[in-house]
Each structure stands twice: as structure tokens, then as C-alpha cells.
Image (cartoon, rainbow, N blue to C red; front, side):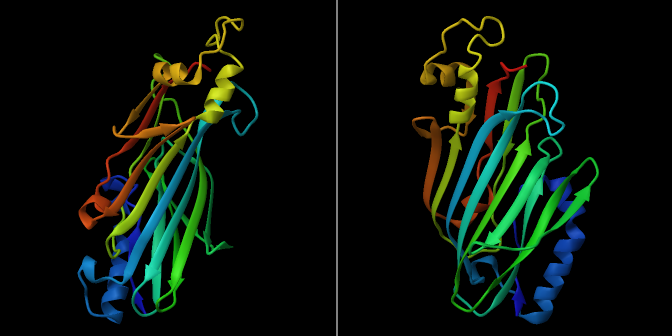
Length: 255
């Protein structure tokens, strides 16, 4: 059984270097069990991806203090194994400025165990393995919640960023959706539309609220209701390794 590394590139380069011993072990295991192969020859394909980000406000875990921003991320990865049985290591990285409150992962709706590796001041990574039978299609789902730490307290600006890339798969990625949901943030804004100054101030319509409060990149997104989204089809190997950074910046009216 060959071993293929399919790790998210969410950690910065310095963190990749810190986790290099793990990657090296995986590489040596693969080399010992099967002949080396170029990335385009690997039999695992990511057929489609759905990523849903929901921004919301909540009290801290201690239950005290002002409201704080969080992001819930729900990710679906549909794989197809075009070759023999595989045992595939995967991982989700955590940045120290977006600490994980919760992480869960499933294979075809069945929970699978993971190991958490923490590097003080540099982040963490949740590592797990997914087994593929020959010719099998597998859906990996994971759900996590991150706290958004204050980006610019003096100017009351908060920022959420995420960087994605996939390695060790067989291209193309046929369909890729990235969706950001702002409906909960708007509902919570409506409870204090005066931005903490005058509760009697009428709430802004959603589109005015979005244009006034948020800045989103990369450009080229579309919108429907309180969702903004990007869709990519037939994505090749190079684009999968270096997708532009997702960045959502907003005025922190709740502080």
C-alpha cells in the first residue's frame, strides 16, 4: 500500500519547515513501498470541493466580556482513487491568530480520529489518515470553528484570512466553490445598528451594510442574498497549489 501526502498548505512556509520531519517520514514510507511518481501520476483526484465560511459574533469561551468574532468553516472534499488501495495522510493547519475552538473530521459521514500537533507561538496542525479502496470515491468532511483575534484594535478593524492549496492529487479539480456567509453578522448588527453610539439609529439595508463595513478579496466574487461566492471549474495543478488568499476585513462595530 503506497502512501501519498495530501496536506493542506494553510500553514506558512516557516511552519511547513517545522513539520518537515513528519513529511519526511511520509515521503520515506512512500518511497519504500512504491516507485517514486510525479504529482500528475498519483492516482488520487480531488473531484470537487465545497468550502463554506460563516462569520458570527459570540461571547468568549469564559462567557464574559464583549462579543468577539468567530468563523465556522465547513469543508467537503470529494475524492476518487483511480489506482490501487491507498492510505493518504491529510492535515488541517491552524494559525496562532486564528485559534481553533473545535475541529472534527469525517470519512463518508463516519468520524475519523486525528492527532493534534502544537508548536508554541507558531500554530498547530490536525493530522489524520484516509483509506481508499481501489477505484473508490470518498468524501472527506471537516468542520471547525476559529476565533478571530483583534487585527487593529485602535481602528476597530478585524480580519479573517485563509490560504488554500492542495498537493499530491491527480488534476483536474472539476468544480470548486468557496462561499462566505454574512447573514449572522448582519442579524447581530441589526440588534445594535447605531454602531454602539445610538441604539435608536435605523439599521442599514444589507447591501449598504456590506458596502460600508466589509472589504473582500480576491475580486471576481458574486453575491446572492447575504452570501458572496467564487466558483472555479476544471482547475489545473498549478492553480490548485497557489490559490489567491481569501481575505475578509470589516469594521468591528461591536467593540
